[in-house]
Length: 114
Length: 114
Image 1: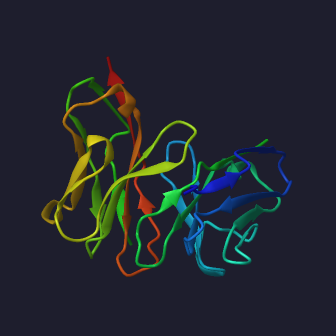
Image 2: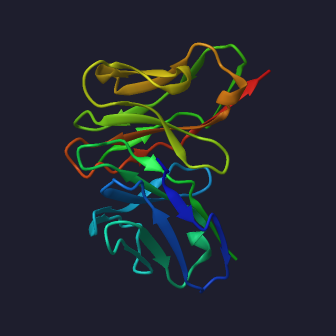
């Protein structure tokens, strides 16, 4: 049973550039979540998918952010025109289905915007 | 709206001493409650959860937590701290019957002195 994987683990980019992160959930898990964690804070919910459908987006997810899960398997999170305030750890989690409240987290992608 | 409060940002105990990390939730309906641990540069690992049933729940690594509805609390304890317990601990809540997104507290850093 391979866990949730995320790629890349670290990303340094210049302000204004676009970045894309990938998350591969546990294979039989239908739900996939994205969270953002800034220094000294707990993770904050961004969005989640049930299979390929994006069912909820947080108000934290501005128009510069977009997430997809095209075939209900892996997911991508893209940030356009990055700003320094986007610097954070981006965490992906998956769970088996809507009746399971256990979320399994990946190692995260640490984004630094210079 | 649901919120999770973890008072203080840092707890230091001696090896072998009792660990007590506090968590209070604010919700009109008792939520499902979780404790996660995060080691440096790693994702979150589920320690234990409360959904229904017994209010004293046991988790991995000797940790346990008790759900007290009257106190809206879900404090985490371990009878005897080990050096390997040094990490950041997050309390989280999910609303039952909803999309199961997690609302996290700010986290507490546990240090263990030899």
